[in-house]
Length: 308
Length: 322
Image (cartoon, rainbow over all chains, first blue to last red):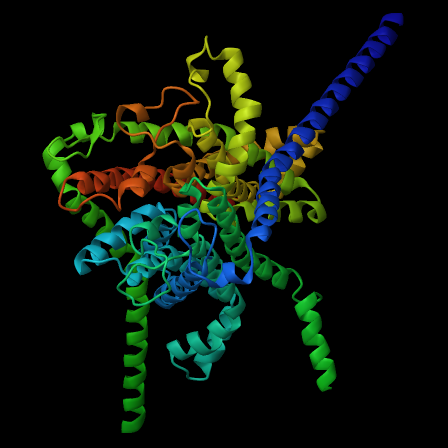
């Protein structure tokens, strides 16, 4: 009798110990896991703070519009770099977006066979290719053949980074369009390509635009392939066949100089670049998070109400 | 009657053209992959002819005319070392982040997850700039120098005077750069674990951590390994930040000897020397040869990673709801 009571007591205390221990372990893991997130966010915060703090002191109207002065003088600006980045983004989009969109259409609309599975797989693998390899490739087939550095080579190299991203996001967003939309088009006797362009794509537009903007923000910061294709220059764009500057290249070159003024200019250029790229990223995010009730959604609602 | 026939024919033709156009655009990626491999192979041919397979095992790097001698071993080792250290730091952090975000209430998890993803949006050259002018200084003064002072004489890992431009700094920056990729993919994979599995674990009285141990980790092991390998692929190909931080040694000096010594990776030597190399000498073929090795390593890593990840996500589609 007594021994049963004792044993019960013993088990109960063992059980309590066990639970306490397990809950403690659980709590410790929770803290570790949370600190992982904090550790990852600290660098982001530090980067943003440093870029804004140092960049803002460098930025002025002259800095944004003028050509770079002589090394270490601290004069001049990054006008050609900003212009070059915009040009190279535009040109690579002209090459990369149509290919990416068509490739995405292929994967989504004709994607039910072995070839498409193969393409999809290599698309994913190609997306992760080291970008410097793409730079070498563009150098070999364009710069080496032409005999001089060329803006087209840079645009081609960046388009290679761009099109798999566009293809993948296009495919994903086209697949979201219900099959019945396509069937409705077929029932109207429309051709497949008209159905695709007029019905499916217009329904999937926002997803595709997101993908394109994401790929733009990705190539905007790309440096490695530009080193061997557009080289960098301190003059404004003059022709497609001469070296051109771009923001990431300018940041790299400035960071190699041993002068404090160059370092400061590097921070200024970094601020401009990060504003462009984070602007695109945050803009997309904000737009999608607040499509109905957010800032843009409110504007649309207001306009609708006003027209009523 | 004739008119409808003509119409039909036209329709068939325009649709065929559309289909062919889409297929061509789809196969563009395959053509490019083959072309890249072919171009790198043919343009680096002189170096393979000159050095043979010893190009992979030699350590000299001399571009002086008439004394040219090239070996890629130090850079292969540099890439492998930095990526391995980056994985050791980055993967546990990323899996922790994925655990936290997949488990936290959306109101906390979503913004934190978004911030971690923003790390992927920061351009590599800005990581380099930050690493060079901010991170390096603190890291050298607060972490490397104390370690060196304490263990430098006894443990070879910590020998070498820390200057900040070294293997460890580059690896830590690489670790930060792979976190968004690895944590995002791991999160997707943890989400793919069927709800029933988690509920079963909870029903046995498991705490949250025990639920992860019992239900999620065994189920998503393959996928998590795939996610880490995906991060490895990122780390191997990363160029600019590493170029700015690794100290850019060449030749035998670039063989990683201590955590605080300078080195060089495959991508950084290409970024540093490609423009100066003359296409006429074998300096450029040597760099392209390094590029070819890098490409092969990257392809192998990424193919394995994608096979593992897609297999995991496919199991999800098949296994739930049965």
